[in-house]
Image 1 (tube, one colour):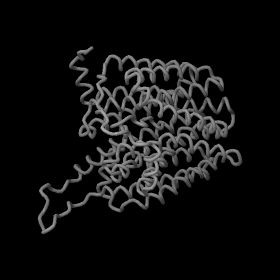
Image 2: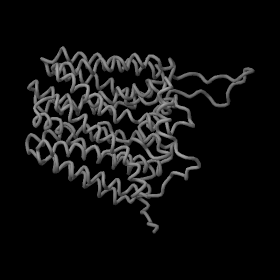
Image 3: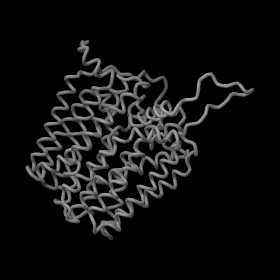
Length: 446
């Protein structure tokens, strides 16, 4: 049955404001509990090693959920999977409010499942309602709205947790309910933008083999994995450190919120990349983030100094957020983009499994400073990997002249045009890769 949508709703969806609103509400619902979950996990389990192991197991649940969501979308439709994701966030808040170990594990698992459902469905709706060429205008708006939510959420969540206890979970569930109400009010069209397949879908193992046989694609994956791993490290181990150092939950929340506030500066990185080149920015950002993170191990007696160093690392990681996925987009062959993108997006899921698992092993034999050193060494390894990127990747260059001395018909792009191009590629990287078929990712790493 055809449903006539109000003109205002169609306009909101067409220019991206609807998705910015949905993304901001979803981010606020999850951001409220981002630091609270780590604080409560440490209170219940008492040992950082056990907290790391719990996060690693929950990461495995998130990976399985991401793989299952495309099949659910095909079976039931996007709106019902999106609805299920919002309901999962509400149920997660209820489970976490029990303040038991079983409720903590169940709540975290429901949370990552809901994030997978919401992220993938949002990405599919964006591909349907917004043209590829408009992503340069709509995606920065959506990501900035998310950055505001992630800036306010952690600090506000911990403040409510300290003053009113479990009411923070009620607020998160209420925001998730608001998300569901706004989604159904918008009544986004369900028509699929995917054309019937003219050939069998690519085999996952074959795509994986071709991906890892390409050195440049491996480098792009490792760089994205390192960046996402650092954000996981920040959200999990900053609260653990601040609690053990005696600085308190609020100090941890302010560091996490401050780090997310720096994401508002990410649009500036595109303009800088046109002058210096993407390789130079990525390598130097990884080196700076590695040095600041490793230095935290020496500064552990001084929580204020650790907070400053973590904010320095976050500023460097913002540059990686803005530009870190562009090497993949530049290097993947156009005819293989869909299948290779499905493999590339696994960096999100593995960054929530591998680092906590490795840090759990470190914490079994060493103290918390070993986690800072381990994260710093991982970033240093990624910086060495990034040295293999093309030297002038993304830098502003003059157009190549054709043979016989004839100049090209189009003029050289100015800095603003080049910056917009890079911003568009970054937006495309943040969008659901591989979405011409069923997306394999789309879940926010944080």
